[in-house]
Length: 112
Image 1: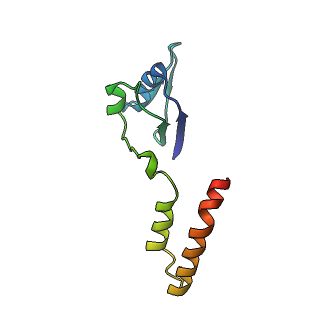
Image 2 (image 1 turned 45 degrees about the vertical axis):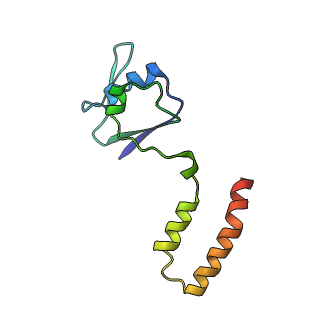
Image 3 (image 1 turned 90 degrees about the horizontal axis):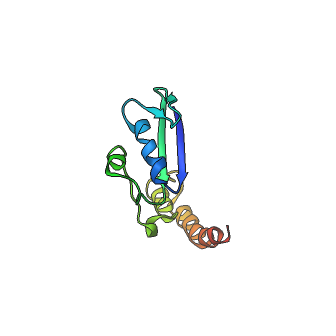
C-alpha cells in the first residue's frame, strides 16, 4: 500500500476539496478542472490539530480517533511492552530493566 499523510492545520477550503478523495471514487478534483485519481492501493491519513473548520460531510467520510492531550506520551508504550513482551527475561531482570527505564526515559525525553 501507498499512504498519503497530511499533517498540520486544516484549512476550510482545502479540507472541503479533499472530500472527493475521501469518497468511494477516490478522485482529487482540482480547481483547474483537472481530476487526479488515486490507485486502488492508495490510502490517506489526515492528522489535524483539530477539525473545527471541517464540515459534517468531511467528518462523516473519516474514521476519527481522538486522544486527550494528557494521554499522548510514551508511558502506555512502556506499560504494553512490560505487560505483553519481554517474555525471554527472568522476573529479576525485568524488574531491573523497568527500574532503569523509569529512571532514564523521562529525563531523556525531556532533554530531546
